[in-house]
Length: 430
Ligand SMILES: *Cc1c(COP(=O)(O)O)cnc(C)c1O
Image (cartoon, rainbow, N blue to C red; front, side, top):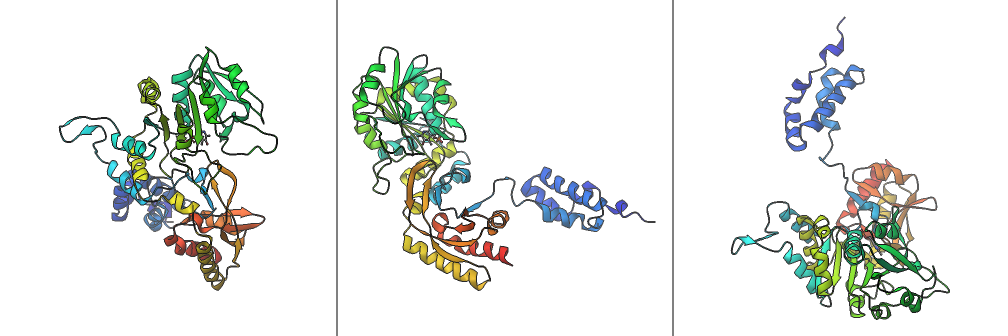
């Protein structure tokens, strides 16, 4: 009898099929070969006919070379750490594309000589924070803190309040980070109250710097007291303020969020922050402050190890100079507009047989920022069983599961993607 397994095409023959040749050009031969080998195994097991190997392999190919999947963020959490924090503006994406090729990141095209790396980005940052005499960028907020404490306090003491020994997320603990630089931590005060005299008693010849950290992801309420930047600046030791979220100037929407301008005006020698939180840019760490302090940081060998790449420089400059970021659009989304979009989505879904209804729902800043602050808005509520199916769909839609329901909050969904959310839910309904 004819064994159908003998008809399974050889790998090289299958890969010569025009559809797979084209796929190999787009995705690379390794992914295509893996799809063919898997299809051959199915044919040998009798799951598919040998004649279906090529078609099966084509159908199982991934859409792209990377495993990262585009996600429609319907959680209502603007800076969702698990979804990559800030989404970039169109201007930043355009800048990334340009920077992907050869660019004059460290080159003066006028005279053909070497130029200061990322000078345009640094100029944009300086312009955005005129109170900073000098600025520097590194890979992220944690790297900014490492560079600051290493340069100012390795082998010496970092004076920090016990109320500010925070864990940022994913097991990242500030004290561990500081200790890793070879600095010692001099804890002062208590969890809920720290006074100026606590700091004053601790500051001495062994002090490398005083560090003030914004406890960005929790709130201590009740019998509390902390010491302001202006008072700490008078202690005579270099003062580093980690503001966390990267707000460059005060904003009425976020009254409790510290900002770089205020900290510098109050006398901070150095401010550190993240680029991909409220600033709405790519992952980056910002160091802003007194000229001589920033210059010391820039000269430290570690600065080279923490420097940002050309893609970050490009996207960051475009974020600083460009139009309003998607982050701020989402933070300031008009509740009535959100309600209108939710109502349109819900009525189209009800027409498609999905049990959808519009409910009031607060969004959140996220990314460890502004804990406790609700952003008033609306969501489309569906049964909880929709959540895993929406996550598995294409596009992947991530909602918020709350009290047995799957909430779809459109705050962080670009308006022209509403149709895609609708299609995704419809696909889960049929
Ligand atoms: C987020 C945060 C950090 C860490 O910044 P990354 O950019 O995530 O490395 C450090 N300090 C504070 C106060 C933060 O909020």
